[in-house]
Image 1 (cartoon, rainbow, N blue to C red):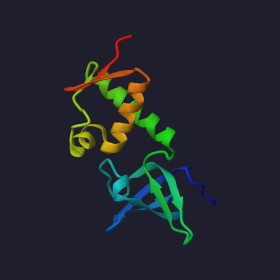
Image 2: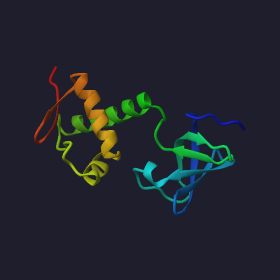
Image 3: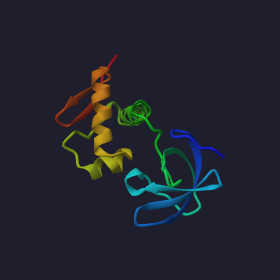
Image 4: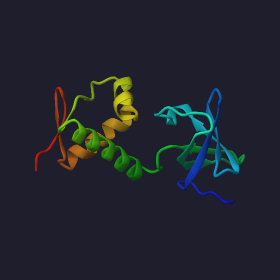
Length: 139
């Protein structure tokens, strides 16, 4: 079965390695989910949606839990932040000074992804950025 970069696939979580976690892609092919791509707890045998990140010349396949491409990722991360703002009555107590661990714990994303999404939402005038956190813009 031919896979393409960016394709949405089903992953079965396998055993951890030094690099990440081995996965079974669509029940047929082996792949690797690297540690830096994991922002949620995973269990052996768990079935989860994933995306083909790279198909290497040696035939090995790298996968991600997030859609690939800047626009797909940024849209997803913006939605996560908007949802948290709604749940927090329009306030999120995270800033660019927050630690990567705090951001990861609250949003399941890296600090870099958080800052990119916040910048995108700010440019769209959907949020304001204050010293104590991020606020939804009242319409």
